[in-house]
Every structure is written in C-alpha cells, then in structure tokens.
Amino acid sequence: MERKHGLHNWFILPVIIYIIIYALYSASFLTRFPFVHSDEAWLAGLSRDMQAVGSFGVTEQFFDLKPRVPHALKLLFHALQMGYIHVFGYNILSVRLLSLTSGLICLILLYYIGKELGGRWMGFGLMVLVSLDVPFIYASHFGRQEIILCISLLSCILILIRCQGCPSTRQALYLASITGLSVGIHPNSFLCASICGSVMAACGFNMTARHWHKQILSLAIYTAVTGALASIFVGISFLFDAAFIPDYFRYGEQEFELGQTASSRLIQFLYYFKSIYAQESGTYYIPDQRLELILIPVLMVLFLLIWLFLKNVREDQVSVWRSHTLVLLSSMTGLSLGMVIVGRYNQTSVIFFLLLGWISMFQLMLLAGQAGRSLTIGLTFILLVLNSRVQITPFLHSPSYTHYLEQLGQLVPKDSKVLANLNTGFYFDQGMLLDYRNLPYLEQGYSLDDYIRNNKIQYILMTDELDYIYENRPYYNVIYGNSSFIQDLGAYCASDCILAGTFENPLYGPRIISLIGNPQYGTVSVYKVMQDNLPSVP
Image 1 (tube, rainbow, N blue to C red):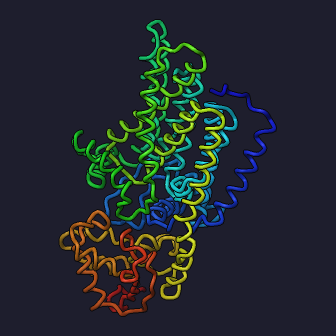
Image 2: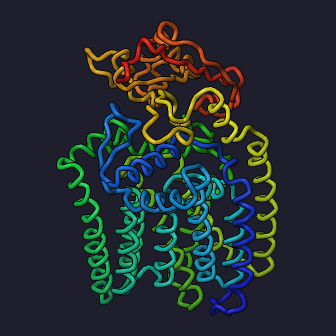
Image 3: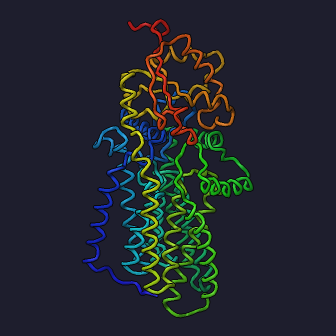
C-alpha cells in the first residue's frame, strides 16, 4: 500500500492546468447538456423575484395560487445565484455557470481526498475520472443545488478522512460550520449531518473506552454548533412566515408525501434506485448509471468483508486503510439513513451516492499494486470517454434552448402577460409569466375566465403534452396537479382566443421525459386572448 505523500509545489500545476482545460471544455456545451429543465427556470425566477423586490422573504410570482411557503432554507443559494445573474444576466448560462464553478471546486476537493487516501497520483486519477463521469457532468451543468451541496459533502469527507473519523474540537467546529451553513443552500444539508454523525458514532464504537469521552465531546460540539447555525436560518424563516414550521411540514406532505411511515420510506428508498437504474422518471433526464449502481453495493460488501478480515492487523498502513474504510462505510450508511429519514427521493440526489462510490473504488484500488492501479485507471478512463461521447453527443445535435426562445419570440412579446409552461421562464420579463400549476387551485366561484381577466393574461401557450396528460389522468397529476383544468383551458382557447401561431419543438414542447423527442408531442400552440375578454386599460 502506498504511503501518503506530502504535496509537492510543482504537482499542483498539472492539477490547475487540467481544471482550466476541463472548465473550458465543459463550458463549451454547458447550455446544451442536459436539456433545460423547468426547475432551473423555477429557482432562477425566484432569485429574480427576490432581486426585484429586495427581499429573501418573497415567493414565486409565477405561482400566485399554488401554495408556497417563504423561508430562508435556500437563502445562501439564492444569494449566490443572484450574484451570477447580476454579472452574467438573466439566462440559462448564468445559472449553469454557478453549477459549473461548484463542480470545479468539487474536483479540487476530490484531488485532495484521493491524495489523502493514496498519494497525489491517486488524487489526480480520482479527479480526472470523476470529471468524465456523465452523472457528474450532468450535476455540474444543472442549475440546481445538488452540486453545491456536493462541496459540503466532500469537504466533510476530506476532514473525516484526515482525522480518521475522530475529529478534534477544531475539526468538529469545521464540520459543524460546513453543515450548518449548508442549511442555507438546501434542506438536504441534513444528509451531511447524517454522514458526519454516522462516521463519528461508528469510529467512536471502534475506539477503546478511555478515548470515548473525546469522541463524545466532538460529537456534542458538532451537534450544538450545527443546530445553532441551522436555527439562524429557521429564525429568519419565522420572520417571513410566523407559522413557518407547520406551514412548511404541511407543504412537504402535500407536495412530496413526506408524511409516510418508516416502512413506506424504506420501500421508496429501494424503488428510488430501481427507477434510476431503469432510467424511469417523470420530467428529469436520467443518465445511464447502471454500472455505477451495480458497483456501489459490491464495493460496500467487499469493504465490509476486508475490513472485518483486517480488523485485528496492527501494521500501521493497514490500520490507516482500515480507518479510512470505516469512514467511507459509515458515510454511505449515514447518507442512506438520512435519505430514508427525510423521505425525499429526488433523482438528482443520486450524485451524492456516486461520489462516495468513486472514492470507495479508489480506496479499494490501494490494495492492488502500482501496475494494477494504473491499468484500472487507464481502462476506466477509456470507458468513461466512450460512455460520455455516446450519452452527450445526441444533445449537441438537438435543438438548443436558445432556438426554443427564438421560436417563442416570433409569436409572443417578452413583456406580455402569459399563461404557459415554466420552462419558458428565461424568455419573459419579470412578473409576466404565470404557470399552469396555479389552475388546480382555482377556488369555487372563481372561474378560469375570472383568473385570466383579473391577471390580464394576453397569451396562452398550449402543448400536445397537455392533451396526453388529460387522457392519462390522474397518472400525471404529480406534474401539473389535478389535470381537470386542461379541458377547461382548451375550451377557453377555442372560444375566447385566436390562434396566433404554432411551432414545433419536440425537445422543449413536452416536459414528460418519455414524450421528449417525439414529434407527435412537439407542437406548441400560441393563443392570443381576445381583447374583449380583458379589462379595459384606463
């Protein structure tokens, strides 16, 4: 087993050069892969609304009826996103640049993790291979919070590996600061907490009785400081909504079914990986990750068996390898437990498991000789390059999101009030777009006609996908809510609007992943509301 080497100043140069080259290459198709998802317009739209109002306590203007809860649990994320929007403008490039920047930071952290495990060459290999993995490219191109949370997760893993799972008081403070501040990125920061807690608990059980008190003290400091930082974000949330906690939990139960029993959550956890393995999704693109999802459990079983076999070996190098392995095993356990406890299984969160899987693979490679490691890294490099080419190339030859916005621009002025799919959000001026998902919340006595008149809606965008959703109701209610509004909306367009034009876009017309790319569902019809149906302007 290779002993850890100190960092030679000269070696950081190729790391920096690779990061720069990779950044330029990745940026060249940043807006093409993956396709732009409505979540990106959702988060960016909220950041723009916050910027316009000058407060983090606002909710999305495009959701005027759909229940929303103002909170500060994503405050830091929106602050970062607003900075990028301010510098680069309100467009898909700016929000994805934030993700790409975060991805580059993750690669640097992966280098240091690999170096800590097996030396600088192992660190360089880990960084390069992960950078070529399609799920990582996807996460670092997608305008959501997962890749930023990966910075927190990898930072915690690096600290825990360095201290072999037994942090000092100072290291416990670092871990707590990272975890607590991550609450301002996304509530899934709880997964970082569950990882840190699991590692410290597992390593504590593996210590002699006379050292337990140090681990208990570190765990207590970590818990207290993390809780204190999290309470700041919760306290700010109460300033936005005096009934924040009951409102937030009610929203979670309604939107994500978080009120399930423990057994249901466990079943959903297993189904979660099955659906990712089979690439089954509602609206998210899921890369082919079958190889990774097979290797991760195999690696974990091998780890456990080898760790048990080497448990009583006292040789220093073996002892260090065993300690690092325990950190990775308990990290994966903590991540899994945290996900089951939260009960939120978003397809984009699988990147957390994949990163731990890559680190575990390199830890296992340390048991092989230098030739075995080099051969494994070389073959994996070739496979990743080929796989990336196969999975990404089709996106580069598909219609761009810019083309979609240009098609919209030929029929609808960007300063018009519009009822449409949220994936159009980067085209319209602030406050001009209302999303379909408001319509299921029309109250009795408040008709669709009233809604359109009161909001002075001038254009309505209809897609073939809406008819498909209505015909297959209630299966797709998770996308737009109760789909009964679709028939009423279609009837309104037929009787009270004129057809301004249509265009074809099989990539951005539908949102359902199984319909994307199918020309049968690629038509977008733009209806102009007759002026007689709008209130007169004084």
